[in-house]
Length: 71
Image (cartoon, rainbow, N blue to C red; front, side, top):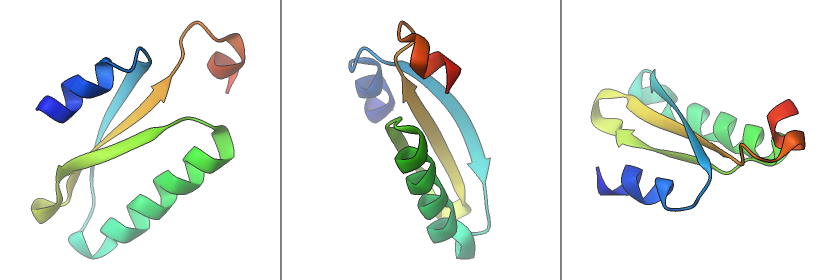
């Protein structure tokens, strides 16, 4: 819970999604998030309940940056 709150302290807008994948695909999910981060330039924080495959994906964006809004 504290980690989620600390993301708000960055000043960026936190766009949350909860994703559930089989545990055997957690690495695939993290690699996908890494690729999105590299392609689009948004920090992405992933955390959650790996034991049951429930991961909180948080895309961090500057809502005041027009270019970021378009991406």
